[in-house]
Length: 281
Image (cartoon, rainbow, N blue to C red):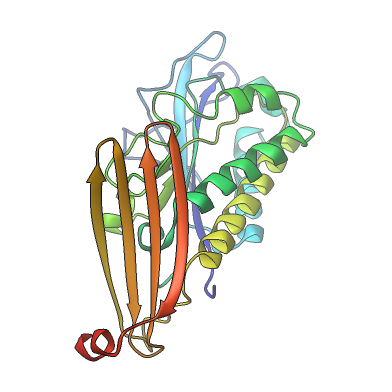
């Protein structure tokens, strides 16, 4: 997979207005507080004393891990009063606060390439790395990974928004959204930085895993046709994604067999029939 990973962050939190004065814009009408960040209100955040105000910080797009880390340091400088406050003195993250991540890779969309196996492996990779981290509240983060607005999925779902892996944003070029990560209980800037290092590494793992399960496609050079087929037999559903590569004369078939409580997957790559290659446009 070639191309830079582009990542945008949404950090929901509650802050101590007695120590921190912040301009906050309306929902989706953020006010810029620095070069890389805007702040806006979010009615889904449940506040607790002494942290009486909810806020969502929305970043610009970062084009690398180094850019992301620099952006987080920029946010730290603002929130900490240039180092005056530790994170937990001015900010808190409870079970209502999400740390959503928007991801895009130039030239392709996750909804066209991702299979459930790659998403499941990414979930495991993230949770395992959180479990092995130095973050004191890691068990809370793991328990809060799925919740009402980040529901755990056991199959691909393209049209629901409030699930852990949300594809709907790709329809209007806002990127793929990973809604499940959260910073519940994190109290230090060092823990926050470690958390986002794990986030970025998990995204990189997802891109690699997604690439592994699909044919390499250069849209400028290849002629690709794709179709999906659906079949139901009783309580069993089979979803087949069939992709034809005219130039390489290959067909890839990914089948996902879904039975309530159980899903199996199969990827098959084979030579396409000559008539299939001829009819492609």
